Length: 250
Image 1 (cartoon, rainbow, N blue to C red):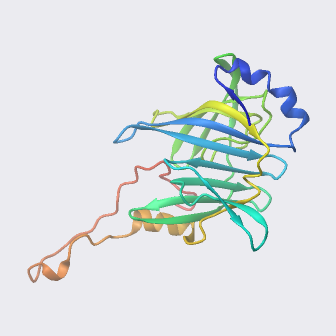
Image 2: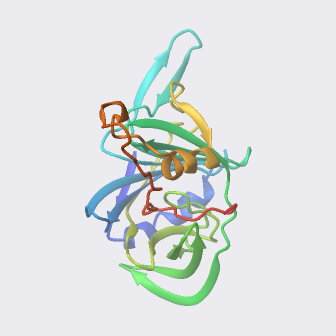
Image 3: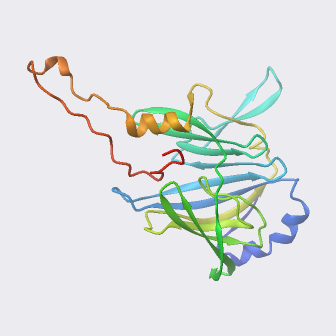
């Protein structure tokens, strides 16, 4: 694997070779993710792209994927069971799969790939030596600013972001609560995305079911049978403070 690390001036020398051999390898883009939430933290994310297959997967969490050789079918299968989260785009089937955790249970959320209505702006800036252009987006309750690079004419980005004329180098919401920034780019001939397998032991739910489970369920944290007779308990819906707070049907 040939790895190209910041400063970004090295990324520019990578472009011509990348354009000529796009079907010969996958790209691996590493992001740093900043969460300025109730408990501020920084994580690492990895975007894997195979443009010829029209697929991408964004991994973020503490653990790495593992490789398993399935001798019965004579193939190598890449399992991401140990990854904390992932967003898997299959543009051919127009499906997006996201591994989530709701309280103490994990699920895979299946949804149609959302239509992102980006607004392109004339603003430009440099991130190290790389010239990037500005775009803005309102998506599921938050307003985002993205900086994409036309030197990499790829529609992909971290998390659920996609659809710009170039690779998303940096993106954040206007409150700076969530922030993604590219740290390195690599190329590999290992067919990771082609062999991608989701967690087949997890229940697949749709987006509405995810919202109901996360925000609309009344979790009975108190054992009512042990309370005095006549005790009245009122349950309230949880406040939406996650990355997605408003959905199209609401």
